[in-house]
Image (tube, rainbow, N blue to C red):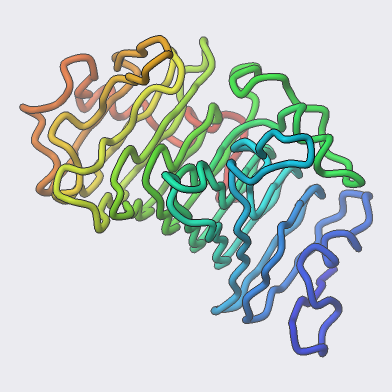
Length: 323
């Protein structure tokens, strides 16, 4: 089954959400072809076995943000801001640009472009654009249910790390991901293949994992490029959002944006310090930002034998994203 989305009136639907809403809940595979255009909408992709196939120039964008006030006087919080929320399993995105254009996090707080909550989801040749907290790879939170009605989404969990180990897997290939503070974050097992991580001028941290205890792998970046427009040494590879955070960079190119320490401890006033541990690893890095002699003493520089254990089969067990 194929559904066409276009803004010229000569398609099945003019909005992406309307196309998703039309999909039966029988779980049969569906392809949604998104024709060129700027689609300004918040989208909830709550169906499984869906492929979003975007033509060049297809751009999904919205501008929600964490400090956006709610009617009860509170603010939206990070997890209510995504431009695209994916709760279905076995979802594939190809060639789609997804942006949160709310702006600088120092003014608006966190503003998520993609919240990827499903299992066995794949992203090829996509562009994810935002500032603080661009891409969240983690489970549905209970707090979401109040704000996504009438859409049905999984029950979810109370906290961001409350998910059994080896429970969800995501794969990214040839994607461009732009942001600044903690802009790839969450507890899921994720493999990033040949992706570009691009830092905004603000600088900050490429990653902030909160891998659950007992889960052997978190974020794996393989043959990726780390760059950006920030000042030299303005970006750390990551900081541990929770104490069991796991992140590894394998054979990645790192330019002058990358701080010589690589990873850094989580030090925020009023919160417990979370030090870098041996679950933060690196192997085969090259470029101006890849001097192993200056790395954080708490991290681990892998041996060739240890690096060889990072395979798709090990990191994303029971699933072949290439199938």
